[in-house]
Amino acid sequence: MEDSFDARAALEAIDSLGYLLPSALPSILALLQDAMFEHPKKVCARYRGTGAQLSHDEKRIAGVRANAFLSRQAFGELTERGKTIPLQAHELTLLRAEFTICRKSLISRAEHPEFGPHTKFTHVQFSASCQGCARLKDFGRVPAEYVQIMPPIDCETETCNLMVDVHMDWLAM
Image 1 (cartoon, one colour):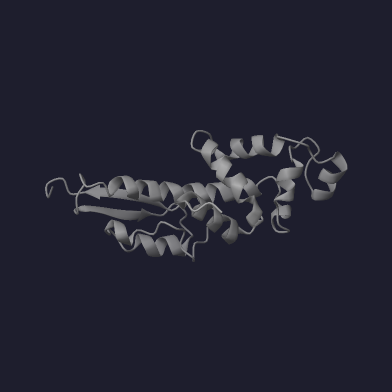
Image 2: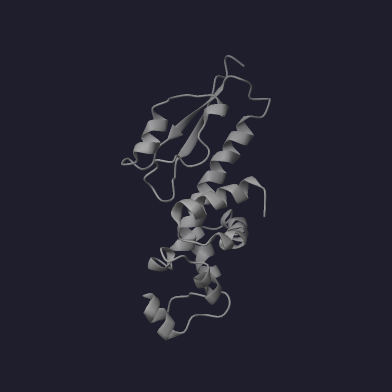
């Protein structure tokens, strides 16, 4: 199994959301590469459209419109929960993993020695109703080691779009 941060982020998204089987990890890791340049919705639509497709009858049974792309491979990666939203399951999982990777990337760049110990971070809450993200936001400015990179366990947003802002004290540097 892949032992990179991307893999940990993807596995967290797969496990937390429960839309995809753990065996979908290689697919999500491959999709993450394209999601750096294109929106996950487009990346996942292309993925669902690649390869042998479900028949019209199979799509009808799955509750998917006849003209939707849904490959056998993509459908085979869905859990029972994922089969309730077969056209969104990969996209939501990919978005959650991508937001986590973005948080990690920002912290990694800002931990560079040139920024120094005066660099602080704040958690930015995008979903006003999420108590988990609000809790983190209330901590105010924190050093890098206290930034929540993985989605908080009490996040109420499926994709956990929690972001991080960097604050540098240029005068102290």
